[in-house]
Image (cartoon, rainbow, N blue to C red; front, side, top):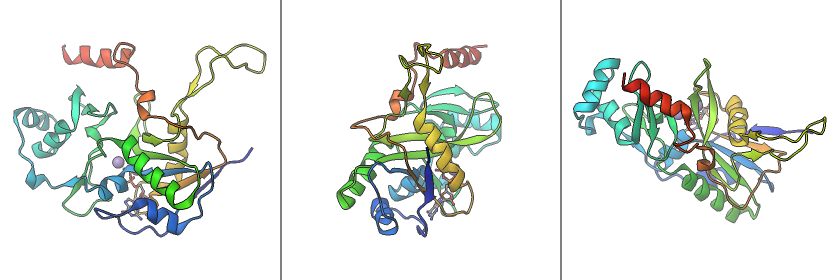
Length: 252
Ligand code: GDP
Ligand code: MN
Ligand code: MN
């Protein structure tokens, strides 16, 4: 078996209104079943999802949390505005975004954004992935998948990795339940987080700094599906013992 992963080179600095799909199609030859992995930073910039702290008014809660971290209260307000729950206030500022993604500071940061500006995550990253994907399919006539990624930490380990925050035409989870292992045992619980695995692989080529590689193509996997949503990965509140634990910590 073989997997190909390569960057789409010479993508310029992305500005509001840029057509990411066309930029990709102009720079590479797309094939059926390609998985186009796009860093959320450029999706945010193309969609104009950037802001300046000068334009934010911080409320009391933002000021209180900002004080614990020594952060700018306007930044904390921007995080609160994009979040429907704060899971941990301190020593990490962990939230669940309005779209259901749990991450530090709602994924808002200033890295790789014009000076003086910050970028927030696309509010509906599945929709962003879909718009890019449908547009690439229209131009090329090929059937592809798209994964929009961000870089996130892990709960129990040091180090960040690429993860999927939005998908188009790929199920983020591959279900192995009912399949046999080498010894004929039936697998009972294994669900493979393929979209996160692909995001991690793509992120190896993107890097985090000034590499200028926000798009990676993964070729050689047959994971395309008719539909798919990143929400298939998010545990329901009822099943999520970690969230329950974090909420109970806040009450101490
Ligand atoms: P995130 O993981 O989505 O937060 O994105 P990063 O800020 O880590 O950037 C991922 C990759 O995309 C890095 O190689 C950056 O240098 C690159 N990148 C970010 N913005 C742009 C852009 O506007 N144009 C180009 N060509 N590369 C960019
Ligand atoms: Mn990011
Ligand atoms: Mn990154």
